[in-house]
Length: 391
Image (cartoon, rainbow, N blue to C red; front, side, top):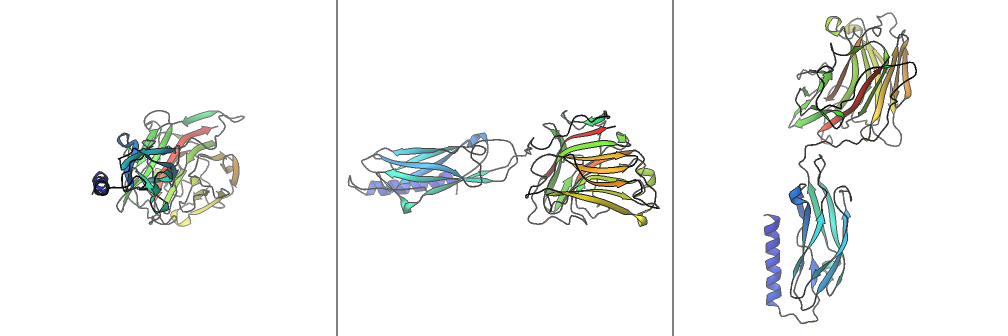
């Protein structure tokens, strides 16, 4: 039954009562909301209309005051919070309270606010309390990304910016990035299928967006790499990003030795500038992997934790390494949290004196993060503002 039809039935019902009852001039009508209101957030529904009814009409004007209050919707962002007065002219038994909705194109959860009757003249509020719930339903597709957060310096003493991608064009630069594709598990029993679809990776508002999506029990995402395009040996590397969160979500910004196709992993070496396990969204990890063969694989790394319940999904942070012939130091927002020197590999080959290429991806599932569950929401995204290399 549509809301319009529901309200029509209510209105007919109350009109019949009013017509059948010869109400004395001193009668006090009861004021109530007959229905809640739920609409998609779009221009067509930029104003939500809440019907209000009297149980009888009278020969006097009836007024009722109201207030619009948030529940999960945010006043000033999702709707306009107002107070006002609704007048029922004598002889009428229905009226409408209008609430303005703030329409945008961003993906959001369905949100609610309430309209509360706060007082009346020549009438009484039915049951002593009347409120109607407004539900703003969302079917948008644009991901909203804040610009807030830490900013890296744009220069460092004794270093020059030798390469960057600021993601300021309207497409992913094919001179900088190509794709890993497929659903092979990637050695970690991951679930996602990596695609080159614009649904999983695109540039918008100055950010590279890597988006993990769910379709039933299937997941898609993207894994971009700069192999044979942009490769570097040593430098200060800064990557400004907002990270996803949730059980089973695994974003990474990392590097592999450019000799990976011939030497294989882990002999080529791996530098994880940043990894995050979505079930612990307030901590990130920096790691190196090495070993002369798969059987000799070893790794070492450290972690950086945010305080006060903050997460890396709330705003931008800058994930960095300072990499030279003596070793590697990891930083978050210019604060070092872990270092290794060039003796770290012991009697195994030290592979970090060679050119490396970048990889950026959002994995779903795997041996380390575990797998999505009922608490995991989709889509999940990593937004990358820039990648910069100083030498």
